[in-house]
Each structure stands twice: as structure tokens, then as C-alpha cells.
Length: 317
Length: 317
Image 1 (spheres, rainbow over the protein chains, first blue to last red):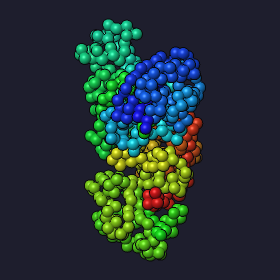
Image 2 (image 1 turned 30 degrees about the horizontal axis):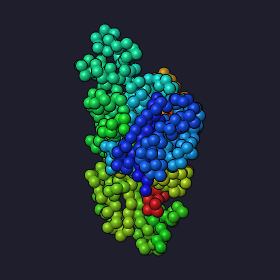
Image 3 (image 1 turned 120 degrees about the vertical axis):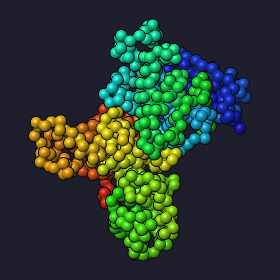
Image 4 (image 1 turned 45 degrees about the horizontal axis):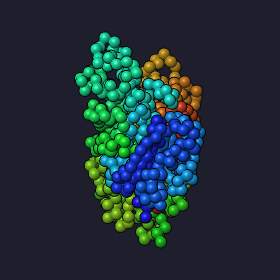
């Protein structure tokens, strides 16, 4: 009986991969650059050469039940990566088929945010839950929605784009989509940086540790460093971000009434600075029947492992 | 074999009920006042006395597979009506159990908006669809969400409160919930009336047929009558309402990626006056991958029948 699966997480910069057992133990893992070599065939050849020594150590390909892949714009139904703006591969890439042809094992593919939700359900803090939402607060804002124990894919496989829901009509421009006021324009690392620039510009007289940083170094990380040192503008940046995120979460709760919302990704490093205003705004915007019910929590999976675990979970499912 | 089911729709004013076969033919139907007599035991006694002659005509209770009930704040999991603000019965009413005890047949209960969605799926324009959302534009804004052919209930049975999602943060006060800027504050009959009052007050110099009506007669119906006569303010009211509704629908599409959104209820009588700005705003607020895909349509069920059909569909499911 096949005892292991391969988990692959294709990111904009790095692709992580590893061999995982059913309990979520990662036997071995590694990473490679996603855009090296540039074409998808070269990528798969390189991935094969890096993975096969690991597969041999796990007892050979006969011991591998299948491969799960999380990728930006990955479509579960078609097994394709479709028009991913952050990848060098353009158009529609039949990624699952190419991998099956190369490795000779079944391959399941979904988008990276859905894979993260699968990982939370099998190995993380949503273990045993049938209704929850994961929100990834990274460079962008991703989401995976689970209802009745299943990832919500929608009629075409593209459901769960909560980062693109409009939360401030006519608000901040999202340069990637052209939309105004989407959640991602505020509650991402990019959004926090923009909020920082806005607040510094709007309050030219006000002192702030943030003014010691060059525009290039003004990141969500530096805002956090200044906030824990008591910098007022830095603290207001997280309050503002949490306010908007919490309002958005309230809307999501009134859609699918989840038991929990699991937050994940770089911004969660800010801990209570982001959690506390988010929870407050969420509760304030819920109607009575939903109040004080939803568990709002940070993922407890190690970020390095979570992507591989999530992708691997697709195969066990 | 039981050939018929009973469908019951409990409304704020009237309760409609009828005997339905599997194809959706209503053998016979009637209605009674919901608040007469005032207590729930009296209501059930009265309903029993009115329904049993119909049941006899259908071949007796042995010929009835069960009863489906749609009711405000009806919870599918518990079979209870819980804290319904628009009903005289207060607290938690174990409605399904009371009906089973009286009629001796299985009873399934859900909220009225979910029942409407079931009706659309079995007998209406969502027939055969596995992913769609129904939005009821009546006195309030209700919603039923279907994913993978099943009503989304959430972990507690209260999912699908899309009328209470915030679409204009800090916007118009919803007197019932205290929330500001919820969809229901704008895209309901009540909301249209408020928009009318606002626009008339904001443009005191501008002539409008709407000024011929007393405040009491200023309804979504009179706004429609003036709009088709070419009244400019009346037309702007529908444009404004459609704009907000369309923005909200875009957010819902990016959540569950439905094949269709079915609009239902009094406001849909305005036809293209509401449909056209709604569709425009929805498309403008979607990211590329969802554009020109979602069917936006009006329900094709007769309003009088739809509530009974929807409730009855719960039993066949």
C-alpha cells in the first residue's frame, strides 16, 4: 500500500516540495526557484531530478500514492494553472497532466489558498472542523473556504477570491486588478506599506520612527518593529488594517457561518496588534445571531511546512 | 407510496400552505393570518383544521410524505424558529416538533429564503444547477446559497444572511439591526423608499412626479410607476439601488462562484429598471476570471406559488 504522498507548493519565487506521510510528518523537503529554467517543461524536468532521490529513499514510486500541488490560479476541475499573473508561464498550463506524464502517478492540483485550507483541516488548527475559512495575509490576500468539510470551488473552480471583494467602494486602487477598495488593497503586506506611506504623508508634522526608513525599507515588517516600540503612527496602521479586515470577515461570516476563521501568512507575525482590532471590527459588524461565536485564530502550522502539507492533503482527501 | 407533501410558508403577516406533488403541481392551497390566534399552539390547531380537509382530498395523511416549512429565522438543524423579530412568537419555538406531534408526519423546517432557493432548484429557473444564489428583494433582503446542490447552512444553520453584509461602511442606518450600510438598508423595498426620500430632500428645486405622493404612499411601487413615466428622480433611485446591489452581488460571486444569481420579490417588478444597473455594477466589480459568466435572472415562479413550492421541496430533497 502506498504510504506517502508528494506535496508541491508553486510560489511566485520559490517552489517547495516534500514527501509526507498520512499523519503529516514531512520525511524530507527542499525547494527550487520557480522560474528556473523558464519554461514549464524545464521546470518539471528539474523538479523530477530533485524529487526522485527523495522518492527512492521513501521506498520508490510504488510507495507514493500521488502528488498534490498548490499553485497560483490552479484549477482543481481542469488540473490547469490558468493565466497566473505572478508566474512566468503564460496562458493555460495543463500542469497536473504534465506532472502525471512525467512521474506516472495521480496528480491533484488546486490554488495555493485552497491547499492551505486543506492543510489546516488535516493537520492544523481547523482539524475536525467542517465549516471554516482560511485567509492568507501575505503579499496578497488569499482565501480558502470549507463548507461541510469540502473546499468551495464553485461552478468553475474559481471560488474563494475573497481578497478581491470590495470593502471600501471607490477606495484605494489595486494596481493588479484595477479595482478600487478591495480587501487585498488594504489587508496585505503591500496594503500595509501603502497605508504607512499614506499616514506619513497625511501627518507631515508628526514624529514617527517610520521616517527613519527609506521608502524601499518601509515594509509590514518594519511597521511591526516600530509599533512594538510604541510608535503611534505604526500602531494606527495596524488598527486601520484590522478595522478593514474585521469588517470584511464579518461579511464572510454572514455568508457561510463558519465555526472558525484561520489567519495565516506574513502579517500574522504582528500578533495581537492585528488580531485585536480585527476581532473588534468583526464582532461590531455582525448581526446578533453570529456574535461571540466565530473562533478567530492564527494558524499553528509552521509556514515552511504548511504549503507542502496543504498540497499533500489533496491526495489523502 | 406517499405521493404528496405539504408546503407551509410562514410570513410576517400571512401563512400560505398547500398540497404539492413531486412535479411541483399545487393540488390545492390556502392562507391564514400568522398572528391569529396569537399563540403558537393556537396557530397549529388552526392550521391543522384548515389543512386536514385538503389532506383528505389528497387521499388521507398516509398519502403525505411529510411537511416542509419555510419561516423567518427557521433553523434547519434544530427545527426551531429562533428569535424571529417579525413574528409574534418570541424566543425559541420548536416548530417542527410541534407540527410532527400534531400531524404525525415528518416535518423539515428552514428559513424562508433557503426555502425559496430550494423551490428555484426543484421547480424554477435554477433547475439542474448545482451552484447558485437566490436574493429576495422584498421588505427586507433575504438570500439562499446553493453549493454543490445543497443549501449552505453553516456550522449553526444560520448561514446566508447576505442582506446584512456591509456594502457601504458607515452608510445608511438599518433600524432593525443598528448596522450602518448593510445591503438591506438599500436594496429592499424599505431601502428604495428611503432613497426616494433622500433624493427628494437633496434636490428640493427639482420637479418630480414623486412629490405628488404623501410620505405614506411613497413606496417602491410608486417609484416604479413614476420611473416608467420618465421621471428623472425615480429613474435615479433605481440606478442607485442597482449600483449598490450589483456591487454586493460581485462580492458574493467572488465568494462562491455561482453559475447564476436568481432575483426574486417585489422589487423585481421594476424589471430592466433594476436589472440593468445591477448587472452593470456587478460586472464592473468582478475580477477578470468571473466576468461575463454569471447568469443574472429573475425568478420565473409565480410569487404566490413559490413560497409553498420552496417549502415543499425540503421534503423531496
